[in-house]
Length: 201
Image (tube, rainbow, N blue to C red):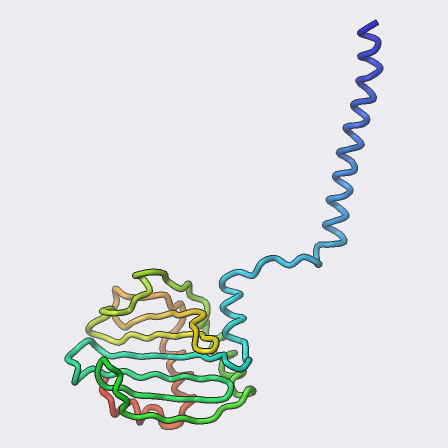
C-alpha cells in the first residue's frame, strides 16, 4: 500500500518541479529580451574619467604643471597652464615657493574648450590609472629631469591626476604621449614657448 502511494505521489512531485524550472526559465528569458536595455551597468573608472574630461560645464578645467630638476631654490623653475571653458592661463615660476615670473591670462569659450578636451581625449589623457598614497606623491621624483602633471578638475578639486617624468625609473601613471599632450596645452596660449624660455627648465 505504501509503495502504491509513493508511485502516485512521485510523478506529481516530478511534474511540479518541472513546472517550477520551466517558469524560472521563462522569467529569465523574458528579462533578457524585454529589460536588457533598461538597466545600465555602473561606469568603469576609465569611463568616469573620460566623462569628467569631456564635461564642459562651468567650473571644469584641465591643468598641466611642469617642473624642472631639483636644484638650488634660486635655480629651480616650473610652469603651469590651466584651461577652462571661460579662461586660459599660463604662469611661470621661480623657486620652490612659486614666485611668479610671468603670467598671461586669456578668455576662452565653450566651443573652443570642447574641441580642446576632445583632442586631449583622442590623445588618451584620461586612460591612465591614478596612483594612490606615496606612489602618487611626486616630491623628489626625477631629481635630474622634468616632471609632468596633468589634472582634470571640478571647481578646483582634482578628479584625476596623472603624472610622468623624463627619468627612466619614474614612469608614473600617465598612459599617453607626454609630447603630444604638452603640445596641445602650449598651443592654447599664444607665445607660451617665449614665456617658458625665460625660465630655464
